[in-house]
Image (tube, each protein chain N blue to C red):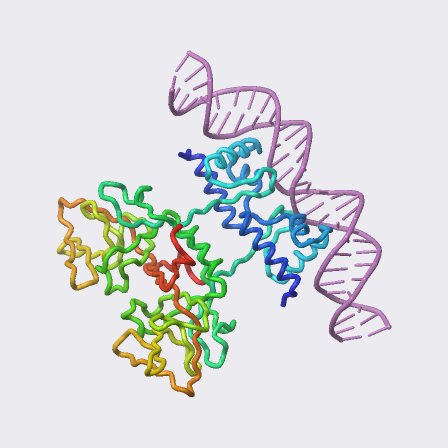
Length: 203
Length: 203
DNA sequence: TATACAGGCGAACAAATGTTCCCTGTTTCA
DNA sequence: TGAAACAGGGAACATTTGTTCGCCTGTATA
């Protein structure tokens, strides 16, 4: 699969990219790994590339791309197999992708329990994708008379309503003279538990 | 702050890094932006660096590091201010950080409604941090007689129980002869809605 | 016991890549 | 109404960086 030596190379490269934001040159790898010949490094990189442990195009300076698979997603766990076995892995979550693809989106920190029946609690983070339009039945963020609120959008013959998901709250009827705007559609709900913030806090 | 032109450069560079895993060379930027002189690009990069929009060390090939702030987190929105105004930004979520720091963690795709009163629904993803120990009251993933389940851990004078959060389910009492193991502690709950998967799907 | 393969050294070489200098405009702002 | 900053061109130049070609040492393994 991979020798110890190869693992060390990978670790060095990953660390370098982590520290610098770009990959090391062959000579930098040589120095970092205590080698004196660049050809040794090149051969090692070739082996790692062949093994699929990294992507690299020839002749491109600092062109090492560490294929970070992301966080494994386990679905139904097969009985009799170790939980984290390959067979149980359904796919990988690439969270970095989200950062990039969320272009313009933002997290709204939920304030209050008005959506608790939709399993959205006080303190949750919801990812809002900005949009001027929203469809009946979708949950979104709205601005009503200067206040921002997260609700289910309802539009029928009786008008536009923002529906809470909690019997203690009343639907909001949007009147003709209200200041009203659709901010965006909710794409994701995220909740931190048990110190999850440590691993993942707003900076 | 930043001119339109500068924004376009940044977008090109970000896209390039996203596609290739390493940053573009000056000549590649020139080609991509329709310029014919490398010095034009260099000067633009210098401006962007001065402005703090990117990090770059001199003389380093493909050494552009895009300082991704992450996704903005909005908390209480101030009345009378545009929703996405700076003032409303509480911080930034660096999702890539999670990928790195989750070391060894994995997402478990929730199967069933047994934890619905904890606002964890069928189909949600929960981030599990592997751990052989768990504290009374924490939610975690457990292996019981070959099955993996997400429950609240309870341990008192009556023994160890795995508590569902749904009246339709019964607590699981761990008997002396059961195959039982703590897999890990739940650190986060994540739910995709309204096509959120498109922006963020297991690959 | 040959053969394959992981690891390495060094030097010469070929590209790829960044930098500098000198120009031409336009826009912005004190 | 100048000075400063933004944008871009072209060419020569200096480095950085990757590649190639021998040659050497162990360790497996068929």
